[in-house]
Amino acid sequence: MIAVTKLLSVAAVAALLGASASWTLSAGERQPSPVERGRYLVTTSGCHDCHTPWHLGPNGPEPDMSRALSGHPAGFPLGALPPVTEAWPMHAAPTNTAWVGPWGVSFTANLTPDRETGLGAWTAEQFVAAIRTGRHQGRGRQILPPMPASVYAQMTDADLLAIFAYLRSIPAIANKVPEPLPPQ
Image (cartoon, rainbow, N blue to C red; front, top):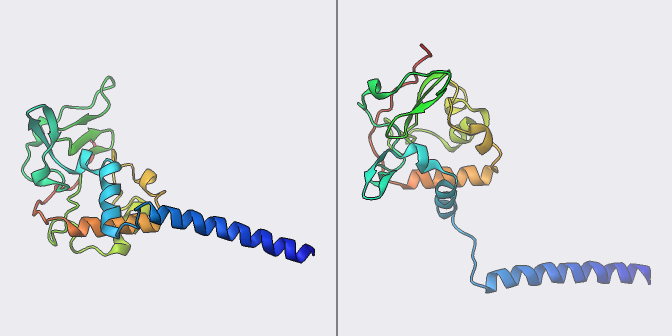
């Protein structure tokens, strides 16, 4: 009798879980594709805030979506970055793609699939390793502030692979970002 009760309890829980899953599906929700999931994650995780150059739009500063995720614009005058002081220990370029602080000057990377200047030659494994280790391609130089790699490292592998799938689907933009500069 106890075995039958346990079996019925397990069956009831399974039925509830199945009904719950069916209800979600019947409500019109579906599993997004990796590219759709990646787009959502890139949009909600603030990637455009730093990796898309900003310009002055009709309502003030805004991301220049014609250069979406292309990183720090090549040829931007570095003299425009103010020096670090105790009162202002960190500054950003007007494009919001270059940052100066005690670590030196960091430039946001080109995340588009351009093979020469972006992520086009990267593998998914290199991308995940870069986020997990905080190192360029998972083994190179340190990824510098203000990139919150340690925060994004908490994402699941599925989420990081979805972000990579999305980044591979956007238009490639040739834009060679400078290497970081050491502190002065």
